[in-house]
Length: 566
Figure 1 (tube, rainbow, N blue to C red):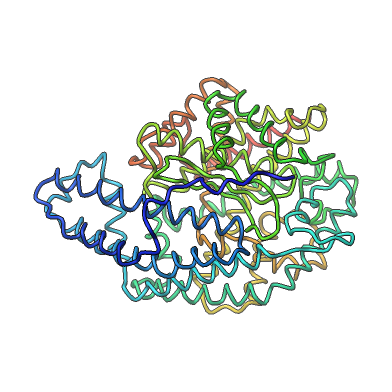
Figure 2 (cartoon, rainbow, N blue to C red; figure 1 turned 90 degrees about the vertical axis):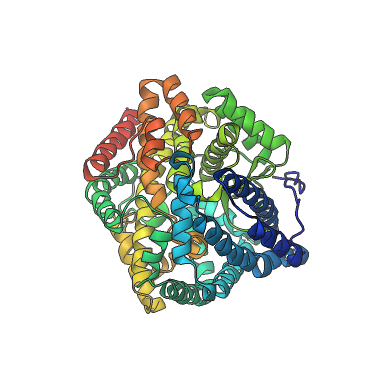
């Protein structure tokens, strides 16, 4: 499963080892006189140019580290960025925000073009505290430690040392005994690293609580709602939690009963709550995976395949599974090059296929934005929007899974599993969001209480139909395998919100495929200065996670699954 790795995929137009030189460029920006609106607009462009250069170099260094966490030189470069450049960025970002917002012409900037930028800058000024800079640096160091631990994980399987993602992929095995063994093997490894995970998380929670306290907030949850400039309230989130529990969980339980009957088992155990009807992995070599995904994208829209083939040709995909590589998958932007990079570390499995399609939704979104408006600036990158196009891409390709599963029954099983994933992406992230609400509004909790709360929430949501008897401890510690809790706190509910929108994309596609794809592209290339609701509307869907909307989409999802069963 080898893949040629291209290391020349990003541009270093600035020397991040030259701390003094970077600081001088920031000071030069601060010294520029602003005597008109045109001066301010020119200053904003110059600021963006400098920040893009720094961003691309830092992103490249971070991806290099994720690709090889064991290389000492790569790690040293990455840590220098986090320990020296990141604090510099925070310090001068605050000064630049002050200069911009204090300008006489700031309020005269065009609302349609600069309104979102103004609101984001104002919230950053509200949140900034000099004393938080070393805390942010320490936070990143802890996240790096998490990456190193997870990237080095290996397990022994039938006398051979295997990367951890290999064992995760065995949860999809047809043989129930293999799935059960893989599940317990995974839990055994997690139990070994649990003390380290607890120590990291305990420190992160205290750091984040102090960051929030320094900024004048009662807790980190409230701080993050301002930091993320959310266009909905904390109460909206709690209502969403309840709506899903009321309308989606019963449907999820009915689907579980279908799988239980199909499996012919008396008890539906955690190792049955997986993509277990796939006879074989969809590919064995990365090249086969890329060939098939390119074809699927091309059948949906030529532009989609064109971007994928371009990324493949230019070394912007790293999909191999190897020791020392960080876990998970993501798509990231390279604003100077005008490119996107997709990273994934999964063994051959149905999930790894879907994960690549998901990340290509992000990539297509990025390239469409680039062609219409230039690279997406940081403040525009709202996750509720970004995840709409990644989930949406998965569902637009639902009818093309026969490229990897040509047998009719395998094809239907693959479609069922993708729709089961749609359920899980409504349920799982929402449960994770509720878990974080609890963690950060109860910052003095113990590790034991954290495990117990995680189990309690898991049983309320995704594991509701699962027999977990005797596995309470194993499930309770499973939070440690979710990198979002460590690296991107409160980045979960966006998946659930956007999945409701993606299901509407699927509904539109079933009614009129060509129109649905065009609407997808229109929304993905829309002006991101607009509200989330407006961007969703341009995509042909509603930004709505109210009780009626959740109920309707739950019913639609059940109907689609029933149609496939016929």
